[in-house]
Image (cartoon, rainbow, N blue to C red; front, side, top):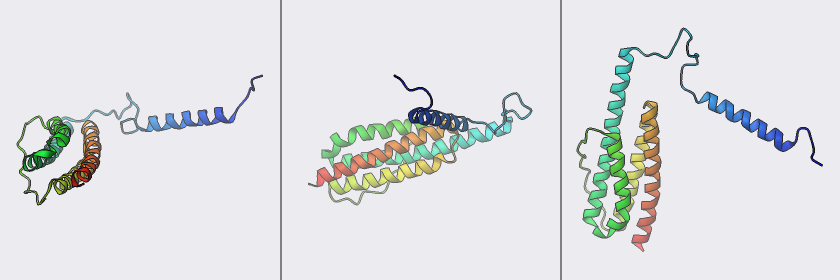
Length: 175
């Protein structure tokens, strides 16, 4: 016979569903006022223009940071051709990130020359550059509008994964 009434599993499921509903309700945008009320979320033209300038400025800065990282990848590949196979997918991803951030097609800033004396240390430097870039994107997303913040969060997460992969590749190259 099946037991009727409230079970522990049912109570936990209901509690989880209620908590999830509360979290999802809290994730909505807006200033806490309902649509149609006197204080709608319509922004003035000046506020929209300011938001667009902020978005463009943040995008340009983040794109420059990604292009600088891309230049570092290019530098390592030129200096150590044996790393090309391992770096190509990561370099292509960084190129895609830079393109996603900037529609202006700006030029990469030239980073300082690598001080590495071998491929392993060059990969370690590249991993450190990936971590710095991910940290910069993470800091920028706090000031960014929602769409750009999501893009920056995704790119920062990819950068953290790249840093890990580069560290592992450096270990393999050194041995």
